[in-house]
Image 1: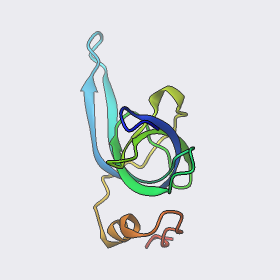
Image 2: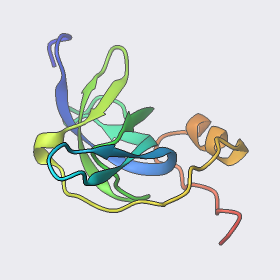
Image 3: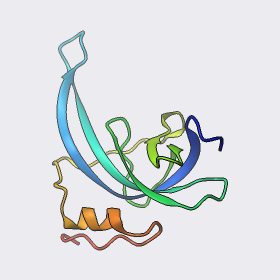
Image 4: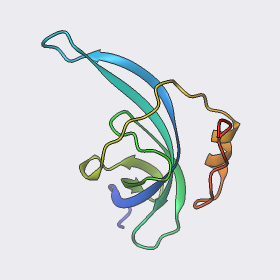
Length: 122
């Protein structure tokens, strides 16, 4: 961990919400592809024993669900995080955009490793 570039680590998905869903044309035969953009709250665990930290990440190329262990790249000093697309598995996500509610803000402020509060619909 030299303080520059992105380091590899692992994170647990605390929560995710759908920001946007849209269709994009792929050229050729007039077919459209559905694209979803998500925002995640992640508990990041650096492999060198540095303290865990909680951060957000946005992506449309990867959509894991709550509780999944995911490969990430991070910058410890700025606590920026992105998914490591070279080491990722794939999943499907929700279909409707989800608002940023009090539950989302509470989870973002919680300590890393804390259990997410139950959803209103559970």
